[in-house]
Length: 512
Image (cartoon, rainbow, N blue to C red):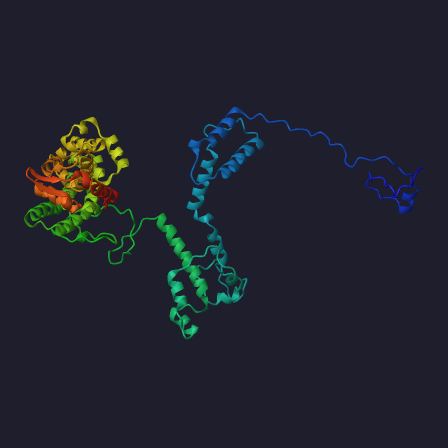
């Protein structure tokens, strides 16, 4: 049994001709065959790959090399420029004629184009705008010109003849601080303000002319020598690179003031006066021993050397003397400032005592527990420097502490050369606490006070007893027939706590 279909099949259109009317479609025979919805895909023809010459390929490799990368030029910009260079050469059939080895790389061309764009004022965007806004002089008409010349000044009457110019602001908005301040002043009458400033209704154009002249003046200063300006007329803002100052002051003493502007030669002492100042300060230090005064004078002396760019053996001598005085008074801030400058001066081979201050640096890094900088100092030492007495002593002290050999360390403490003892005094207290912790673990139940005095480098039993009492051991000292003894078995925890507190905080004021 056959059933009639519930739909009418319509053949698919194969041409752009107009379809037959619906009645004609109904008269067509019914087709039960399925027609494909899409035509079979046609095979795509691949474009043949172009064989680029070897110099071109090498040029591309050099463009992408890491050593030829230029900061500020992105990879996308370089690729675009590279494609442009090769495409232009290929279109003009010059691939084999161009010397690709000598041709500038795309990033170099981009850098040169940017530099030329910055240096050529004719290509700056606001020049065109200024030329557009310049109004021609007229004889009462809006389109007339006088002798074909363009006026550089704009009159207030021209403002009404060109209303469109007020509606279009300049592309680069440069604000004048003084104009902004004047705009914020509230006047009772705007007419009064215009009369006071002499601007009238052409204030916006006057500001525009000022900006244009300011740009032209700035550009002319870049390409023309600067006229001499007297000190009274000079601006408080001076150029950074003006060369050294030559001092004219003859005073031996001068207070130190931090510079907030360019130095005045009348208040700066020349080298001959500075040499006399140093001798004067050395005598005053031996006589009065006033550190606050001497430190202020030395800082003023160092400042005069700096502003005059004086770097000589005399400069090294000034910094060394100030560093030694600061060490004697325990002023690590000033000592580190001098030490930092001395490192740079020693690198220039200007004389002085570099090995002495290298030994101070090693002892200072022991004090601050700075292992990183300590490793740098040790790596920079030469075999000859390691044999110098001061440097050898500092290295032995470092080695003794690293190995926990307190007996040797305190012997070295009593034999410190130069002024290294002032630095060792800053950390010998915590090392004594570490040694006492080890003694309390090793000597039980008690130990003689005399033994502690000899082992820890004290000058007398009274000094060692005072040190023990200051760190909480006053209740653990017993006086017996053979002398005073420390109850080492009971006081161990007290010294452990004191040692942890001493190593937890280190004063590194003015660290290098």
